[in-house]
Amino acid sequence: MIKKLILPLLLLSTVIVSAQSPMEIHQKAILIDTHNDILSNILITKQDVGKLQNTGNFDLVRAKQGGLDGQIFSIWCGEEYGTGKAFAMANREIDSLYALIARYPDKITLVHNSKELQKAVKQQKMAAMIGVEGGHMIEDRMDYIDSLAKRGMNYLTLTWNNSTSWATSARDEVTKKDSLKHPGLTDYGKQIVKHLNELGVMVDVSHVGERTFYDVIATSTKPVIASHSCAYALDPNRRNMKDDQLKALAKNGGVICLNFYSGFVDSTYSPKVAAFLHQHKKELDSLTQVYHDGDLANIRLNAIYRSESDKIRPPLSLLIKHIDYIVKLIGVDHVGIGSDFDGAESYPLGLDSVADYPKITEELLKLGYSEKDIDKILGGNVLRVFKANTGK
Ligand SMILES: [Zn+2]
Image (cartoon, rainbow, N blue to C red; front, top):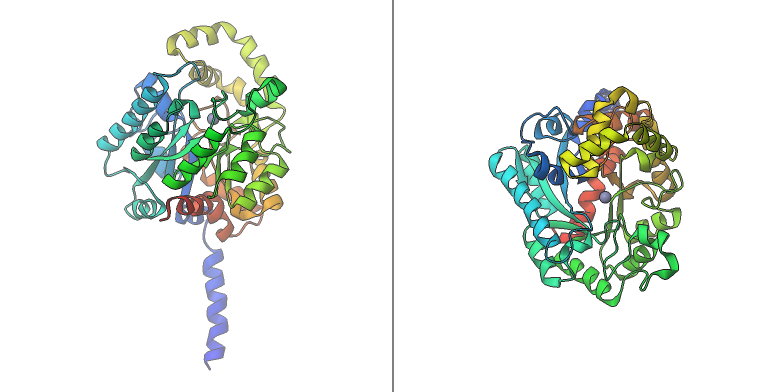
């Protein structure tokens, strides 16, 4: 009798599970985006991202719509901020995140480990985290690392496009090659990686050169993160990771979080955007004067000429192809989401803001991905690496 009951019950539960809509599956998952540049922009635009905005890719209203549970906010300044300025700038940006949290304490909260993150999700608050993008912001000082970690630094991207005195960047390893004095990590660089491991701060290998990457893999005792990169095999850009790097990352237990930037997704994008920028050079120059920031000017130019810039955006399917390629190469346990929203001028069609993450879930379901695998890709894998680093 019991056996007779079990089968219909099992069938019924299958029906219930399969009846979930893509949006339900998406909203149930913990979604963590490991890279967003809005804080750097806020210092210039002064916009209040606690309220719905009609520019940019991020605000707390659209984040809710998109089911975004955890956001690692990038703390960044360019290489022109040298010693005496870069660390101060990093702190100014952290101050602006603290101010946002103080203004909207019922909507967003700072978390320091995976436990606190899960608690925030239960309270329906966005879990905010801090990623410091560029080793130049520690100004070669170990005590600055301690200070940033105390303020909530969750990962340190060892280099941005510029090398530090202790680690070489992807740009410099490719463009300067043999003229580099110390390719990879120096002894001090290795000490920094070990110190980050001890503090429970994740080591971010996006932006670093291949030499640095392999030195990190040999040095780090904890799983590392590539916070915003794609697959080199599909778009041979130095910011993307080669197959052997991806395999080494998987062996380390780490995670690569896919960057949405059109230039890292689509190998045909660069020449197209170069032509677009050339055509609107005068306006770009004046926008750069207004914003004192080339990237933000570029973002605004793309918005002004929306119908034109839309034509050169890759399809969403191409980003999904990167996810699927990496999953097939190294397994579903090592892939995540690192949009680079508000840090680039163009993303695949359909991905206009943080409200659009559900489209990724939809596409993965179409490809036959299970709910369990989608959970891992949306945030489960990052949560695991976060926990492995912080110990809780
Ligand atoms: Zn970056």
